[in-house]
Amino acid sequence: MTVFNQEKLLFTPAKTDSNAIPIIFAFPNEYSVGITSLGYQVVWATLAMRSDVNVSRLFTDISENLPSQPEILGFSVSWELDYINIFNLLEKLGIPLHSKNRNENHPLVFGGGPVLTANPEPFADFFDVILLGDGENLLDNFINGYQEIRNADRQTQLKHLAQIPGVYIPSLYEVIYDSLEGEIKDIKPIDNDIPKYIEKQTYKGNVLSASTVVTEKAAWENIFMVEVVRSCPEMCRFCLASYLTLPFRNASLNDSLIPAIERGLKVTDRLGLLGASVTQHPEFDSLLDYLSQSKYDHIRLSIASVRTNTVTEKLANILQKRDCKSITIAVESGSEKIRQVVNKKLTNEEIIQAAINAKAGGLKALKLYGMVGIPEEELTDVEQTVAMMLAVKKAAPGLKLTLGCSTFVPKSHTPFQWFGVNKEAEKRLQFLQKNLRAKGIDFRPESYNWSLIQALISRGDRRLSQLLELTREYGDSLGSYKRAFKQLKGQIPDFNYYVHSNWNTDKILPWEHLKTALPKQTLIKHLEQSVGNFKNPIS
Image 1 (cartoon, one colour):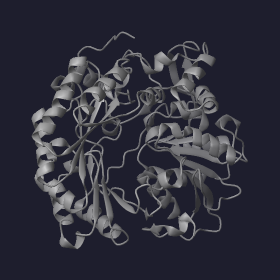
Image 2 (cartoon, one colour):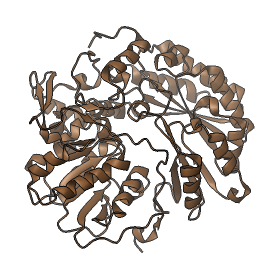
Image 3 (spheres, one colour):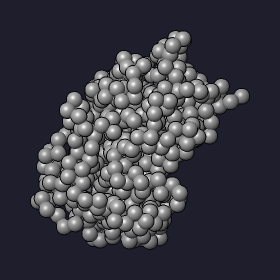
Image 4 (cartoon, helix red, strand yellow):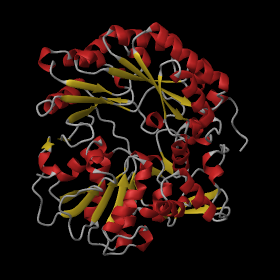
């Protein structure tokens, strides 16, 4: 029995037309990882429910029967480093890596997902089409648009698709630089009939996503996932999940959440509630009451990160009764100053109370997420994080405490996109590790080197495409990236430019032609509210 035979589908695939478009929809990682992605599941089901599409799935370790001559090849991209697997899959299928080298015999290669919506430019040379934003309407509009020019030549197809809102055709835009190593001078369409800007598409309905398949082979075994909220109203100044996906939307309790949950729990007993700020759903208490019914006593409930001041004893009690041992909150820092800088509306007292409530409700563990290297941070602020964690431990003895900690990484379309990575961050991670583990607090730092690679791709422009190809040959360590930069010296800006430098706010950004919820001037205003006058920072 193959892994595909073990799937429990929660939708009915359409019977395909004789002239259906042959499509391969790929996830550039193993099946167990890809099938756990809610975004991948929903896009695949959307395609499979169209009678004019014949879709086959492809993963790095397994695939369905693939068409010999696919017309479209799609990739769902959730993690930056999966670009290496995209290269491998393209070569496996006999498709040139660069879009400019493809001809009428090759499928149109499209990509979507959070990585490409945030900043597609480092990958622009490898895709014919990039879909920016929410897939609810965008995906169908793309397929419908392709149907209209299905038999046209490739260039005609691309120019036609470029007129569809949210469909970005990188090859139809020219990036002009001051020099090989210089700033971007201009980004413009190659023809007057191509839109100057591409606007990310935002779905504004109140029926959000839910799993379309449940399988024991998923990384989260047999889980049914339901999206409770989309975006986040807190708007922490570094947060891509908030700024990129605005506005904040709630799934309707009666039209979306309850019907989806009832559908999912017919095939599994494991439920995951997803969203950047799940407990801020306006009817979250009603959802908890619904899940508290005796008919659901057997289910296992998982919940995404929640806002600290919504951790009540009631919430903790319901979670522990539903086989959930811990809850996760994002605190960023123990420093009041730093929380004000990032717009984190939270006090140490609320963090301590959350721990007390978690323990009183029967939970065994509390996981906190923090960050070092935030703009304006000093060592004294990191010391305050240690003090805060010790205060939490004292207030809730016996509760297992974990602090996961990352390094600040600048993200496109956020107010902090102009900051570079703080070179002191690695030492501050080491400081936390030394001072917390000695006190019995489980400290789990994210790799500093991985944060540097993230920053590189997050703020990269098209010149990075040649670097990405080189690192594929060298490996995915930080040393491999630096080796590639050394080989390309004089041809692209240096590592420091992308990763550590602070950028002027009047600089043309690599994603300047891609429009999201808030204009650049609003992001600058939010930046200045956080850190004062940032007009001309020191690089």
